[in-house]
Length: 356
Image (cartoon, rainbow, N blue to C red):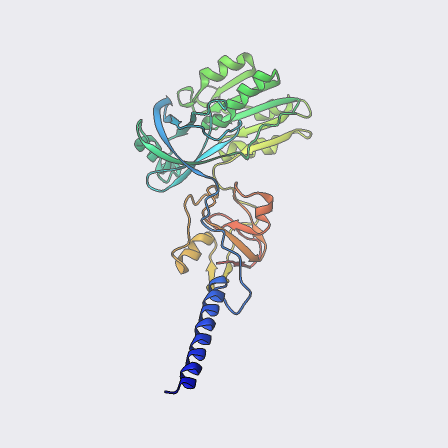
């Protein structure tokens, strides 16, 4: 082959190599090339730095309720109402309110009630009770706070049901230290199952009303709420039925703050709709009563998820088209404008398009 032919072949080969590299780069930027490149997916991104903490105390503080002390060094600060994500040994993620001292930067304290399978438990609380013993390590994320205490309220009414006392306990300590006006209505199945009874009665005296169902039936929510002054901040945590009753009985002129650790339904129901997966080009049907996550994982098994309750953020997906029925307790208003947690949230219409 002549020198000129060799030179020409080299030029062609070089041009082809440059073209292949450019194509590979373009495809990497956009899986749907030649369509415009999409942004990085949001699914599976950790929402907070994970910490490895040591369980230094595991004690029963009421029937079926254990309290854990989790120790570390220079832990992130928190304020009353905050909670942690615990990544359990099985990989399950569960959320527990912080109930210790915010000034203690060497440890976090949480408490959890054992929820049996008959009560709808899925194994997380049992794992905490049985496996997170003294000496065990556990991964935590947070703290995060969507139940923050209003420092400017003229008065407070706290309503707790059972284990719902945990986020409220540090609130009581803070408002008492400030000299604020407050009352607590604390209900439970029986006194033996109600944690921190001694703590709250010692702190508040006659400002604390304890209502054990086996002694006095259900708390008189209407009477407690009616007795509040306009401007009172009402904080409630407990079973969904308790929170719904407080919402229904709330007088005008009071502000209500709720802490939920289970997804709530909406008036829109659970009707069927379809989801287009834009990156893969597939369309999946979401039947009534099924989650978007379940339908999507049947088509794309590798989709990340964890808690399946709308709290950990692992399954967050960007929504490209469609109106979202948000049912989570995690995303900010800004995040809700363009993404959803597919384990609990649904479509308000007949179709959603996900960046997946």
